[in-house]
Image (cartoon, rainbow, N blue to C red):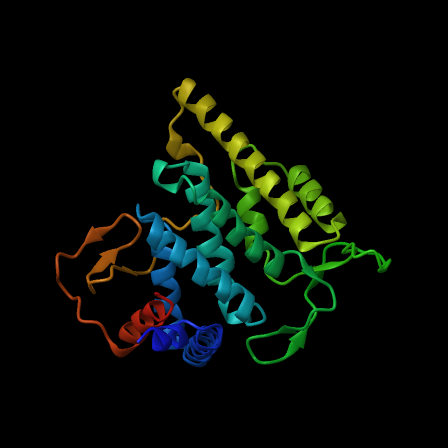
Length: 269
């Protein structure tokens, strides 16, 4: 009845689902890869609802498992690079999702590149470490982040590899972010800087097109041109981000694949 439906969608039940996903995601390395590969592939499909669900789940993964260094490469390189590529291409289907995509980038950047100093960081072997200082100073009690650590530099390097983006631009962005006193203000700075990077990239591409220079001569570092394997919802394996289907061949999913699908479905309303 209506009461059962209310209980099913209650905050307590949803939190229990998230806790279960956290355990399954981090407890089994065979599940982690397929699960994140599915979410990453959904970021590029021409389906705003599917992409929005993937964004929501990935934001939750970043917030819930940001101390797990095993996920750094998948989140900081594959997911960050994929999302940045979507933003820079400005495809029509992404209209209305731009803010969500940038929010995901912001969560990843803040977790891996501009992590407040003093935050515990758990290594892959379970040991604690502090990362690399990117700014120095003492706390003033104003809420300004005067010292941050970088636990994984790939997101910064991906931004630096965008044609037209300079080290000075990224340095100024990080300084301005650290000067803001709330997460909301920091996110606003990041959003504006990503818009600037997008505009710089667009201007560079237009200049190259006008000069008849081959677009293949430029590139963005580590934007995934080929996922190890992506999956559609029907179990057909697809060859990388180019979406070349195997036409039903070899699409018998193993137990890890099935469990990964279950984790994706877990959040569906």
